[in-house]
Image (cartoon, rainbow, N blue to C red; front, side, top):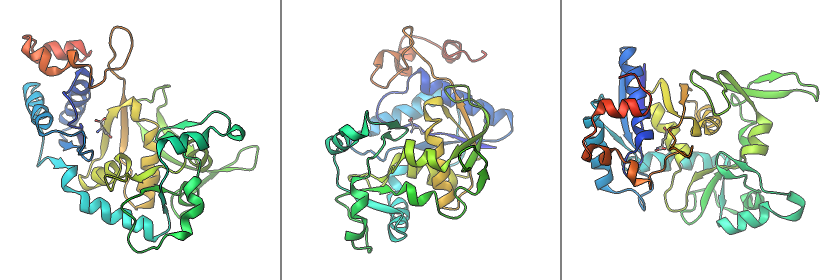
Length: 302
Ligand code: GLU
């Protein structure tokens, strides 16, 4: 078993991160497996070296040790670019010049009703997909975002390879194994359909204009390159797993086992955010808390 903790150095770690890291570490050690660390710093406008330093400090203070070298996404941009180029050549990606306002306007057009919201944000209304053929297929443009043509992706060999019968003529499905639970208690073999991916998720961003990659693409490539067998992370990423499975199938990468865990919330029931500085692990440390206090606070056995 090999798992990982993959924080973004865009602020201090809070109790939610500590829970995720401690749980993954504990599950790896209990199985005699490995626990890896990955710094998800593709967003160079938000990542800061001092936050990265604080991640190492906080994790060490919590008593967590990681195996092997730390993977840093900012050192892998060429790898991401190469894969994005392959999607581009295969016509599975299209260039998108819409800004947020354009997308919202098109998605809220009267005939569309309220815009649908999926794990990658508003379901893309398809505007730029119509212009796919006007772009040269040499290098992908750098001044546009690149989106996955989901309608095409789901028809590729090996992506949705099982059929199930339904009253309206059958569906093609893909699946992954969940050993934790999604936000609605989803667990075990999780099945999802090609139609759900096209209608409820849509043309997700593969590469952001300013970055040359996206969270979804990087996470899938990095988990494969780090040989991760079990992804342990918060239940807020449960729905995004379906995107990750589609990308794994397109790229012929193995699908790890997923274990989504509950989120740590404040007294009002709101999930913790990075800007909620009061709950930074560093603050607890400065106030004299011990790692055992942190474990107790997040409901782990001390
Ligand atoms: N970097 C993500 C975060 O900080 C976690 C990604 C993942 O675990 O897949 O929320």
